[in-house]
Picture 1 (cartoon, helix red, strand yellow):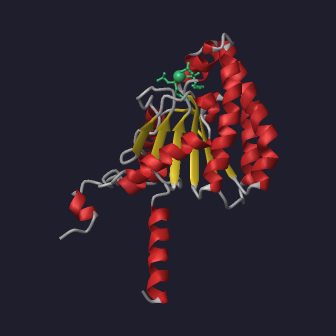
Picture 2 (cartoon, protein in one colour):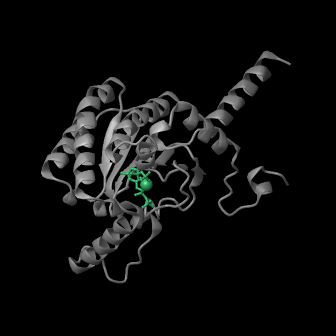
Picture 3 (cartoon, helix red, strand yellow):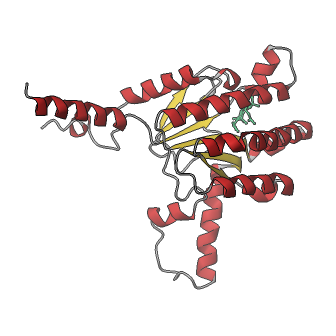
Length: 259
Ligand code: IPE
Ligand code: IPE
Ligand code: MG
């Protein structure tokens, strides 16, 4: 085998490997309450322990060339939890944002929050805006935190924006809405759809998360509770993803270019 040929194979292998790294991994971080209960602790202790898993997952994503890591931290439905748990969670989030701010800067990570910010306290909102502004120019991993978010809320606000545009005569009433134009009206505009969605704690449901954006996402469920989730668990999810064949409606032969 000539030197050139050897080099080409190596490059092809590398390209193949890179192809298997998802551009966007999204995680439904679930099981904090059960983790705490198993230890006879308050639910909040589980949320606190989960912060270390967020750190590990972020580090892993940055180390492995994942472009976007998004985390479902608080859903619209989570507002129905006991007031004390909500307050504890909010405090914990502010605390984590403040503490991790320099780590995000040191590692060139851009922070973005997505959700119905109007429901958050002005203090939480302020801290979020601060960290978003501070990390806005970072060009490495994009860390998206979904807060006070639900998929139906996102879709409905996009529909209402179309209605508003027509009412304001910014769009003619007979102009059809396209998928591309709708994408831009969602709060996730600019963020690629997730390639891989991980849910911890054994639950196998979407819980009103990214309904539109998960149209062709690969799902991975693990029994590991979120506070126990570490880099080796993330690695297992990526290994499983690498084995999947994403067909987008085509046949397997078409994907493998047979015939
Ligand atoms: C996920 O853990 C964190 C949030 C939803 C905020 P849970 O709090 O849902 O934990 P379980 O499902 O009760 O174990
Ligand atoms: C989904 O978890 C929301 C987050 C992880 C933030 P939940 O634990 O609230 O979901 P359900 O209600 O059990 O489906
Ligand atoms: Mg849960």
